[in-house]
Image (cartoon, rainbow, N blue to C red; front, side, top):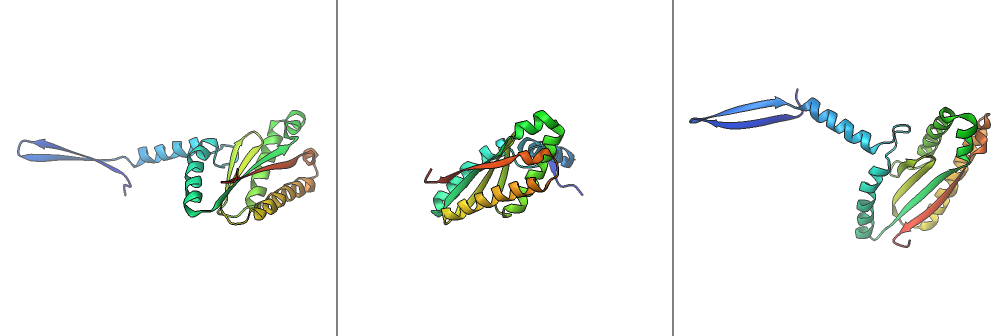
Length: 170
């Protein structure tokens, strides 16, 4: 069954000629390209381009609901050392592991973005109490540091730092 059809009607004399064409494959390809443009290839997370489209809308929602919106900037400390000493394959593997650890720490409603390199952003909507965000940041740092420390490789040289901005305060 076709999901997408293109139709064209042309008047022919006293009648109408109707042409239907299945464009499902073309639409699926278009959707795949859109997904690729908005996703980080390594981690599968939304990327910077996705964030630029999403964040203004999230801010408008927060303004209308009279709620706060939190943005947490997560940076892996000493990540360059991993890439420089152990290679980019090990660094890529670490980024995938960090992504999974972050996913396990956050709620399903929170949005996580890979900005590039070793930088991630977490967007949390409908914030009632800023202290909850501080606690979440500490939980993320503890979770990542604990995860990396469990690994019996030189990856334990990496830790995390988090910067926090709250809309509308910041």
